Length: 144
Image: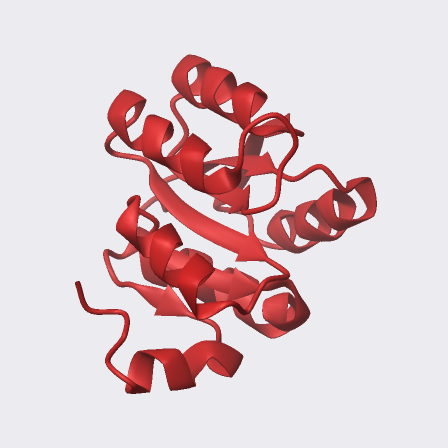
């Protein structure tokens, strides 16, 4: 049985981070990077144009935040899964990310171990949260 190809859009404005993410994704033959974007506006345009299966989205982006971009991407590409990648462990930001339709939230500091794990989880329909953010989830604050 052939493994379906997962088409990924990477959205981040920090080039060294983009390279790190790309290197990790390239280790998996069933993932293909179909586009890159460096700000929220470009993220929305590329998502609509390319129709990715998965959007890896930074929260802090120029022009339009990742949270606002996600809200629009959900409307334009409803089947795409959104996995946030962020340096921010702020519980309010994490809640906002899930509220606008994010399926997962990976802290950049955890990405070495958690990125591919998070990608697999959200693609299989589960929610994913970085281990260092588990206490937010345990406090029951993610519900709602």
